Image (cartoon, rainbow, N blue to C red):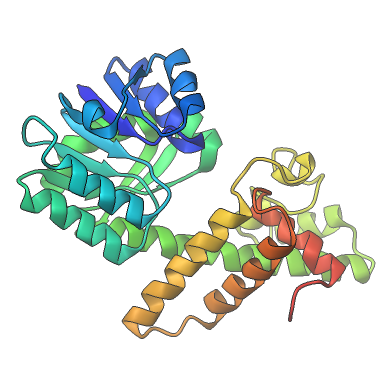
Length: 295
């Protein structure tokens, strides 16, 4: 297939590169010349504009920072593609913006799904992402050949916007879980329990969760966790804050009480304002231990 890939950042670059390795022709666009250069090294053809990238595309994949970026691009591109085309948005954006983007594409005679991802840059590079999909079953069937290259699991969550809804709900669980795990390690250390001992207990007991067993916030117990690299790499705290805010926005519109999600968002907002927003979200344990977050 001829694929236009818009957004060759940390996630998009690995995803687009895997499509090239699978034999697809990928034309990419990114406002960053460095991103385009890195893409060229992986066989991604560079375009001078988004409109140029999609001119002969069978499918358009977007991995962009915000709902505004996605909506602006969709408005520009629905008339720029040469024929009815499949639009696949892998960005993490507001549910309402996702539904609006799909409407823009569908009203112009195209197909559209939202397909945000879970797994981070490691999974993007390895082609083992999980895709949470919203949209018509027929459109997902068409996209499946591409999603299977970039990911290990694809779950249809419902109609347009449902993929985004599942993503922000999942990440609200993750943010709350990481705060809980971090507080437990901070308390355990003060009570004389070593990090390894607490991990050995909780990882096989009722406290077990992904934030503990895969992304442990203390160095040692899980060698692959960012805590062993001074919290570099992984899922940036600023992105966790973004997703928690998206969950809060959706909850307010839906009149759903999410007290723990709201509190986790306030804690990450305080943490990001104090620390480097690029550090892994598990680094919040450093502020908890230092006592610099409001309780």
